[in-house]
Image (cartoon, each protein chain N blue to C red):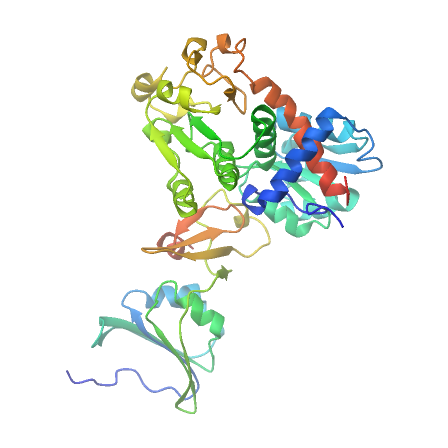
Length: 152
Length: 306
């Protein structure tokens, strides 16, 4: 199949590619990328040779850190995160599940104290065979990552 | 060298090592045999009950005063600045600046952990919503050791509400550090949660899910009863299970001689009053032990050596 470039090349910034189709908007929202004030190009439902359909996000002038990239691994484990300088890829992040994740997701337990107090949410990440579990530091409840990742 | 619990926050049973649990149990035994009235001399403890409680609050306050300490606090969050909208974080910053330790109960899960992040003095969890109640587990462990002479390799049955009962979850986690074997006896709707069973599987701890209370009585060293709350069921379902999880004296005739019946109390009708007079009933002594277990914990948290 012929591959055509559907999103314009980036001079400086980060390209998050191979996001499962449908997750791109979630990632924008959860990582508050729009709040950076930088120009962002989003491609949804693009054709992918390996995935069928994928989403892609390009953020200008923002280099995603290792920790941020690892947080992405929770819901887009096969995403690629490339940091670009002067049109060249200067760093390819290898995504690994983080041990803990802070301030991204709200705790799904409505009776958890973290909702009404001046603290950031905090989860311990426990990879298991079929699922990744997340345990809230405060209420100690354990959730499947799919439950945590949709709450906001 | 300071004892390992000195100045530590007491929030959740999984935070404890096996040695720390043994230290509390050992100290509780010493204080029961030889009461001390000096271990908290000159110490002021805040007793902050944002949610009402009878046994937990009174036994904590008894423990502090018997050890020579003094208590300030409140028994109902309705009369505090929390009612005016103050955050728990702010309340705890202030209260902890007055006192040497903070004992607290709160209706929200995670409240004690959060409080510990804002307090320069140790926070002791007296119950946070449906999450943890570590001092209940410590008094249960002390009572089990007192009646069986050991915590090692015991066979324990939990009966009743195993889904919502936080005491059951924490005690299961604690006893699994000592190689216990478990029977779980509960209606399907109130079965032990998957996450606890998964933890036991990971640790290679043996457990059996049993339908009938009669079958387990001759097998166990400890029969831990809990209350099945009527409001968890619709009327028809409740009728079906009613009576199945009620213990009567006649059911104990094949019990081991060392077997003791425990219950976190309050009981309603799940232990018939005719059990009280049997040699197996130990739940009132268990409640009394709450004072010794809390004395042990407070002494260890507030003194380098005991």
